Image (cartoon, one colour):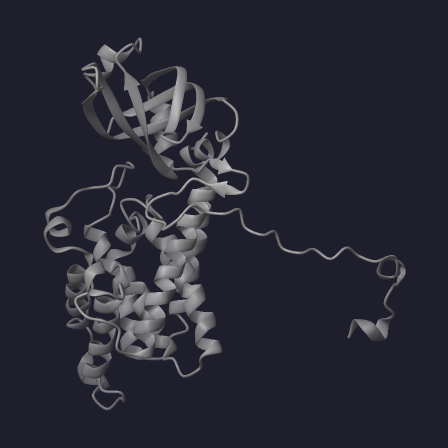
Length: 351
């Protein structure tokens, strides 16, 4: 069982299950009565959660000797409450060599989805007409594609899993592609390229090692943040372009670079959310709202999955969402009428 499945299936009744996980973090705490306990942050390719290990647990003393990044097998009876996942009668052991190999390969369904999303990103980039934007996008994929595919979109809140950035970018690109058709005045090439690069600095802020599901903490990410890093990356790749061959193109090379940098720098939409500048072009506004929409809908999906009901149809509030969620309205499904069931179309009606 994956962690995502565990989070999904333990809302209402206890579940007896086992799963593999990597220790992301270990924190030693004390209860109000002064008794020690541990907080384990456990992760796999689908997500993570925090589990408390109390001092009366039979394996509490051995647990004190375990280091972060250790790969474990956990089994027991699992429930979920307002404080998260809790275990009853659970135990742990180290993964054996065969289990380690299978665990590091990742959840098959998640891996399949992320592969499909990556292929979709490549197919949309292939449709770009501006040679400057198409070439810089290809340079990014060629030089950083592997790192891109193992980076999360965040440390928590949304797409906070290995490969989550690919999922986030792919979904944003789908939206940008459709919105460009609804609003043909938008520069589609620029908007799609901006989606690709808007979180590219997270390759140094939220990335994972080649093997494992414990996000790395790197000095560049900690000291600069993903927006300055994304700006630096765009400029680095831009200097590698054969710009002399495109001096005759309009808009001019420098204008294209400047507009792409603006999308990266303004995509958070507000100064107090970390953007060094505010959106000032149609593509910048579109990118900001597409980014925010995809992040929020992912948070909603996770919240409906994990948040218990505190009243009929009302779910407990999940940070950073602004209020408790209400169960969404199911779509109307028209029932086929008797005449619809009995009527068979003739050949003329098929065309």
